[in-house]
Length: 446
Image 1 (cartoon, rainbow, N blue to C red):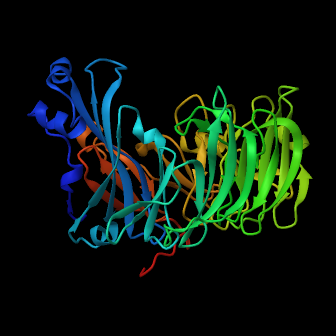
Image 2 (cartoon, rainbow, N blue to C red; image 1 turned 180 degrees about the vertical axis):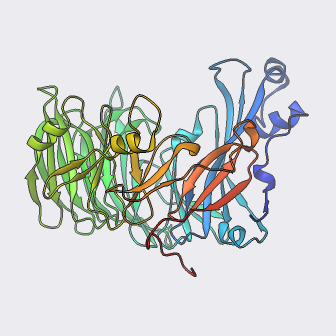
Image 3 (tube, helix red, strand yellow; image 1 turned 180 degrees about the horizontal axis):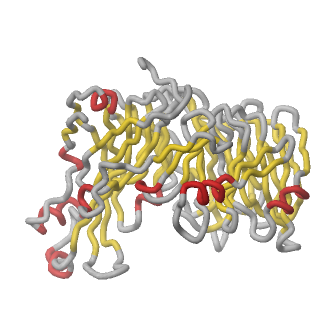
């Protein structure tokens, strides 16, 4: 394992001087506030660790917190930084230096308000923070906002290497801030001064108050960014599929409903769209959409038979080159759903029995970067990778994790299909190779 030199901007706040901690987190407070919070403690942790598509770079959030020394105490201040580093150098036993950029400061749980993703060419990171969309250029660390001042961005997706598509609300109004103009926009990341032409605009739609943007939303972009499925109104709406490239939108499904989730196939060919009727609680409609043709197939019958009661959580994407959607159910755990012909594989239950996994409930499952492989949820030491037929099962537990020492335990965890990457609470990166049977992953230069 190589050596990581921590960036000065991301080192753990020193515990010897309260003034140092306070100056970093509350730079403009007065002496009265200093006296009031003199008994505060600082805490730092990593989160949202991700590996770039080229498998050569990682990025994560580093959160510095200042809070009262009591259970469930409010956070007085937080600082969030984006940290990125070349793991290719670490993997080749070479020394490397992580870089960081200050992202946001505030008094709330910032980690829950920030979403990040690499561009397909691994040269940029898109960051949705505080309802503003920005792009970080990794070669020089330049962070620039690409959304506009009057927009509250709710979701986004990469559309190629140099373009981002995003959904936003503008002109939010009404006594309860429940009316706004909805915009879907294509924006070049290389032409920040030019306003991207909205691919679609709706004036005066019903918005949903709440969330970090002041509005909660249910938009589901396809993996390529070309399509987006969303509810046209809240709380009584209907599914709509928008082609970002043409601006053409098609409505489908039951009306007066709210979404329970949308899952996409990795090639944009199919979307499983689940909604519940507001007028008849428990009436779940599951529709299979072909976005290129607009054809819709009703799968509500078999869906209700396999998932009675509370509907499962369908994951937005599935494994590359896969043929299954992922549905996580409270009573059945993680399941793989083949739409044509309809088949539900309760793989989590079988995995729980065959591998002796503890717990009362079967684990939930998630996509993996390795083709045709899936991973279970849970703590870093209890995760597994497996194929849909369970003929190949590999333990992903991190042998380097020292559970007795909080500073060296895995604070953030990521699996890129061939390696496990962890960042501990001391901001140190560890890499461990994982041997998956078969041609699971193709990495540049390997």
